[in-house]
Image (tube, rainbow, N blue to C red):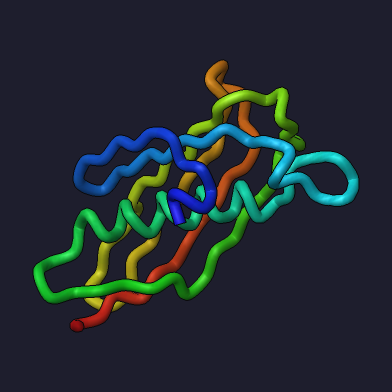
Length: 121
């Protein structure tokens, strides 16, 4: 997914992951801005990987719910953006995470919350 979406940087620590990408015209929608799926994919990826960083050996996860709120439109002129995801609560069967998508000046473009199912593999 990272190669498909053009993720260009990555940070990780237990319970926190950051992905970065630069929007381009190839991810535009018909009205001339970046498609919402670009932001949703960045956020879903970093939220899931933040949870992944807290799993025990032999566990897996999958997204049950993703809610994205779009705060402003992106274009190719937005420049690089960073999606930061943080685990809020890690339970035995479910995990909860939240994230935000900002540009390099800290302007907020989207926020997200996610509920993830944790299971034994």
